[in-house]
Length: 357
Image 1: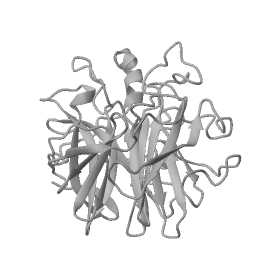
Image 2: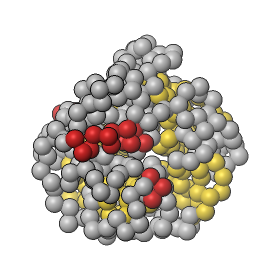
Image 3: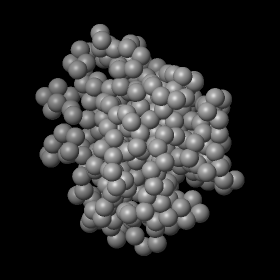
Image 4: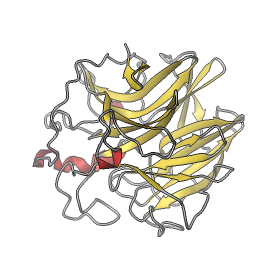
């Protein structure tokens, strides 16, 4: 899940961080538009006049609402039972992303254990966005153990936080990754259920945080904990606007935060972006720095009572693009279950997205 992996890194917050990053001014960010809905790693579709929200929870929860602000009402779940993938948290898969292609709905999800990369991205499909008609196809890609996990980039990545993009020519791309070596992308087969190739995946490395946010756990190994330390980048999402593809990422620590021992300012979750003229990158930020080299233009960060926004997606709603995400509110609480759904319309200034009130 975009946020759960951060839980395993909190042991080191008080040990001193190695990232020497100037605290960025965040007063320019507008507050979130309110929904009063608790969520984590949301994905939102508009189907007709109805909005559908899919989020972390037992069997992947589905909510509907008449507009983005809610009220959001749970109508069921994507899966009727635990994921068919025999690893990780099968009962409550993480970080679902749902897309619609030619009237068919695809829900990509993660199964894993917090802090470990013995993970998989699975997919379920349905002919409708609501509950009751989803079929779980199981593994799309996996890392750590299992068939295909011995092929790069699966040997060095973490198969969680899926995001799927289908370009106008019908080609699908699965973007995934968290911590370890960051964000990767592989092309998908025509049915969008598997990579084009299981042995030669034609992977692209799209984003990485080169600096560790703290020293590694002394028990870290290739599966649980990164021996080089936690590289806090996850939650990738790709959108398209006016000739550019935009790669959105969540950088920093997210969840289960101790209000008496918060990360140094600027090292909590924030939403960053880079852009490219093609769906495969390279993605660079406003200063021309490649996201693989640690680049990423800050689009939305902590402000006022809003803390650690991330787990984002972008919805085109008519003529408007909307950035949505989960965030914490200092006056409510900083626990995992305290996270709220927020959103802001986007405008573009010189081709770069800016969150609006």
